[in-house]
Length: 315
Ligand SMILES: Nc1ncnc2c1ncn2[C@@H]1O[C@H](COP(=O)(O)OP(=O)(O)O)[C@@H](O)[C@H]1O
Ligand SMILES: [Mg+2]
Image (tube, rainbow, N blue to C red):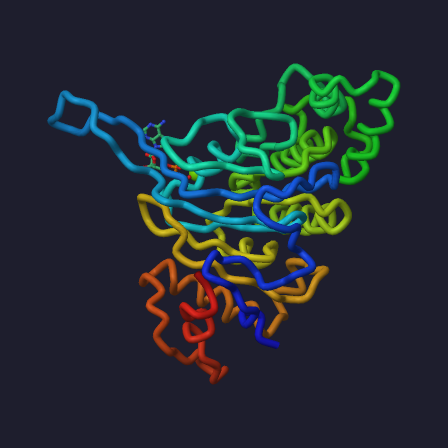
């Protein structure tokens, strides 16, 4: 099977009519999943450079456009400092872009809202609250009726495998468990979109695999729309329907790679997959050398690598 051969039009969209919801701006609220359109996003910061007293404009993100389908799992990789976190801050509504638009379910967004769950690297749990009360937080903010809360909390505690740890405080948990609490908290208030910024980078390799498998399992069940940033190519390919590769700063979309590996997937499946190594290698090449699209052979495979992700296949 060639996992990269699915046709993609110039906007980087997968050619899958079933995933389409109609013209841009079509309302699709109420599905529990969001459709996202990012249009020409640009972000600048004003920074002081050495030897200069004046603030100078620094462009962190340039002309970044991307459509994400309802229920799609999109991962984003790019060199450190290319603007990945900047992008996610903008999509969350926490920081307005210098220019460009974010359209979620046909509506232009101008600020943060509970339709977006944000999961960061640093867990961001409330240290004075137990696991149960951390998960309850989103429900309180969303004014979910008091009597409904225990059932919802227990459901998500079960989903992330934290039964028995409900009354622990964050400092009594391992990094992997804290990250599970953060995931449960975000899922519990039922956002349509999950934004994840290198959420597993602070945990050890084994825990990371467990969390990846859990996230995949949860996604299979809930089909939330997910934008997931990572600096691990393996993680990006394992999780994604499409991998967005960004350029170095200022960040733009360099290429979008559809990943058609069969689902459901697990990290262990990927280790024995014939396609996984050459897909990850192709992305590695894109990040290393600018992804010229030159024909190359993988040792012992005989298959064209960069040719598979040539410009007619990806954006
Ligand atoms: N608040 C800020 N002020 C000035 N520069 C910033 C700010 N936030 C990010 N940057 C700069 O913008 C670039 C992109 O940062 P970031 O989005 O954090 O990168 P990434 O997440 O891809 O590693 C970096 O060069 C960073 O130094
Ligand atoms: Mg970052």
